[in-house]
Amino acid sequence: MGAGASALVLDLVQHGYRSIDAVDLSAAALAQLRSRLGEGASAVRFVCADVREVCFDGPIDLWHDRATFHFLTTAADRAAYVARVGEAVAPGGHVVMATFSEHGPEQCSGLPVARYSAAALAAMFAQQFDLMHSFELDHITPWGTPQSFTHVLLHRRRDPIAAP
Image (tube, rainbow, N blue to C red; front, side, top):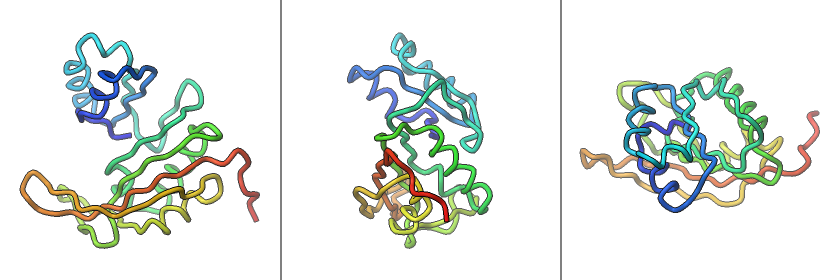
């Protein structure tokens, strides 16, 4: 999610991964990524979509989000995201997420953000996912400013917890 023109997709393709969905709201960022991939672009499906509404051809094994979720600042947006993850990730699949920690900035690129502990993220996804691992880490921006991130690894249970 929020693939942009980041190096992750390029690295995955160079290591032989296929059937990758690169999702971003920006068509320009996806075009830049496609150009950087060259012939490797055939391993990637470029999806220009809002993360709250994105649809996939079938279940996915891994949902990766570094720095998209924290831009969803309303309860309705977060609920739509969580629902989309639950619909997309296959039972037994995983979510890898990095979002601003409770100690992170209150704004990013001039936009308000939400901040999370690992426990808060786990609680949002608890109906279908278990927290497997978490840690906090400072990311140093290109301007030398540290930003505290919470990282989580969630595992999709084969059977969801029944709603109360």
